[in-house]
Image (cartoon, rainbow, N blue to C red; front, side):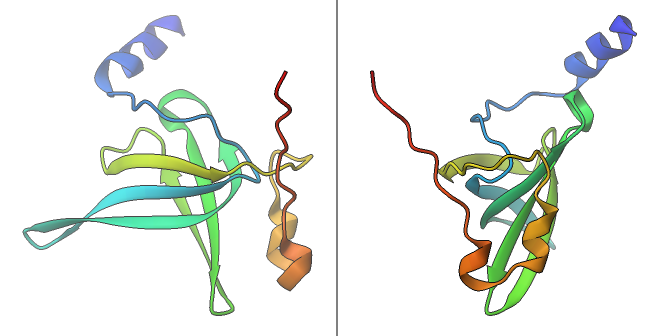
Length: 118
């Protein structure tokens, strides 16, 4: 089992990613290929979940625009991922916050983590 993990780490380049989890608002910059052209698009929304570990790890981001909700799953080991920027850290008690799908308006807000300086 350790040999498999060693080979997976060796084959896939790892990105330096910030610490984030469910409830955080992030902006994900990823590359899109359209024909021969390549451009960067930013997808900003709330992290609903993080799943698996290592090479297979993915995270789901939910964004609501104009009353339409869009969820997108991003693999962490993807070569198309350029950067992830944490905009706001949310305070939630669950690892997967699917209940946000049923909420609208003010009830869909997430409390922000307050960091106390010592």
